[in-house]
Length: 134
Image (cartoon, rainbow, N blue to C red; front, top):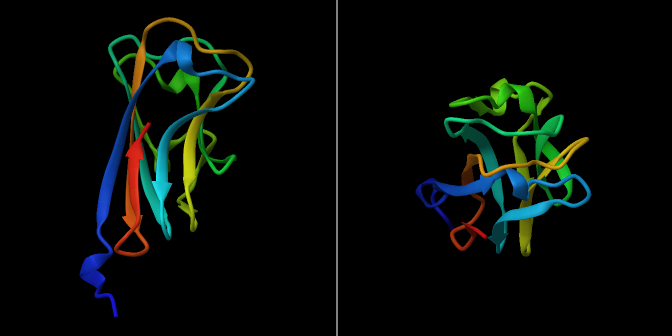
């Protein structure tokens, strides 16, 4: 029997350059293994310049959008979490096996060297599950 103390939270962080965020394909930023996690929150924080181009910035779990916010909300030094995403912001789960979280823009590829830091606040569904940025 696993106690409640074994289901702890952890954070996976990834810094992404604006020009690496595409529309035609998503880019994996984190991978999770074993029996699953719940992503309880997302914190997206831009650098001093913000993101360039695109209409919406999206995070996908197993190809399903769970976080989407307008690029215009990701101006210089902006912070957006699940609750404040302008389009979609819902908790999600990643089930048994090896699963990925990825990023993608809508309408146009990102450009430039500006960055966004993504922090995924996760809760383990068992003692073996792990997650890391890729």
